[in-house]
Image (cartoon, one colour):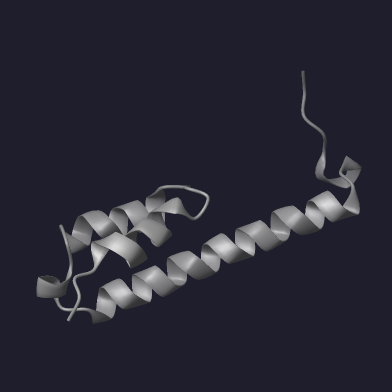
Length: 75
């Protein structure tokens, strides 16, 4: 079964998809900026591994949230 085309979707569904994408993009940017500015000693795990996960994994916002909640050490 083929999916619907973008133009065939209800306008509210299209808006929800766009808002969800913008939310995930915002989370990724916030996490990447924090990762870049934070010293290596304040990161749980490898900075490179977090950067790869944050940029390459399409997670629906899960990876940035995990980084922001668990990937950083308390100063």
